[in-house]
Length: 111
Length: 113
Image (cartoon, rainbow over all chains, first blue to last red; front, side, top):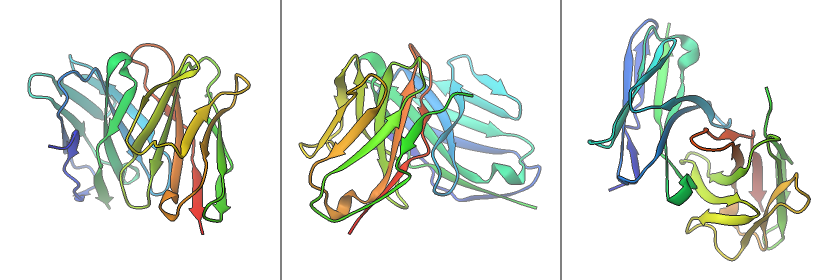
């Protein structure tokens, strides 16, 4: 089983749609969880941290289920500018030094 | 907003040569990381560095690689004898204490000929 697994997509959605991405991780000792977005040939940019209680930032909502080792990201009212690759990131190891990236889910938002 | 700065933006080197990639962390950050991303592939963890020593490294980070923070500001990744397969984007990331997320530099594109 991959350490961090994501559906690669691509997800093709119209503007205004709601889209959800899922991510599973294999290390039950993982401590911190994040969603990043990456545009083509650019660096990953932090979208949001993921907390056990779930958290929201504008149109974005992240959920964490530690029992199922599952993380999700919901994007509401999709914009053209949301088109990117969304990376699930998990930090584990003593002190949280080891960071594993999922391979990413590609999103295309069309007019 | 503070940024992680990486230099050079693009490095072209002959196979077998040594390269040094540089990163200036955000000023109050204490944890430093290097990643690589081969074109079209996922971001891969190389190494983490804290308190002037390596705290974790991946299988990719073999004896050809080394990191140091020689002057308290720059954080460097050295590849001793480059191979064709070292061609990739190399990202530096830094973070503060606790559950703080990592912030990435905009990368160095390394091309080995």
